[in-house]
Length: 191
Image (cartoon, rainbow, N blue to C red):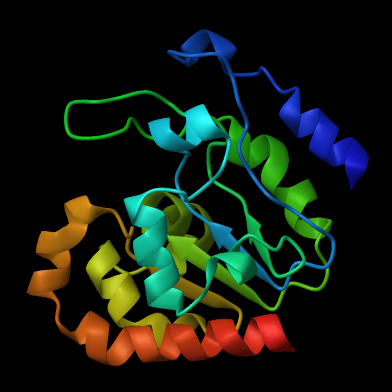
């Protein structure tokens, strides 16, 4: 695992396409019980080298009913973005994750964590990549049909404050999805 972490930390495959120096941000451990696969670190994570230490991370921890100690314990929660480095700013938010990372690193990373009980796929990028043909016509329908992916996978929207409109428009998320993801998460980290 140490060699894998060192290899990822020194990766510069997409350096020419990044607006900043590569800073791969991830957390992995062979005993991780839950793997969170999201899009890519934001500018706050890039500056601090700490994933999910922002408003979206606070919201995600609320969704999971998870304290910071558990969330940042790599033996419980691994954090593996689709793109490991901050991709830069776009017109309506951050740019998409660089396409090089997932094919280059994900298989070996996920295979290095044999005790994983639950994979949480946050947002369209991870859901398209991992759910492939089983993914529904859009993120809303994929999340609405989360039961079809259980017990190994749980799709969620991105917890960004920018998704307030989506959350308001889909009140079933709070009543139907959150209790189930909290239960699945708690079971996975305590097994």
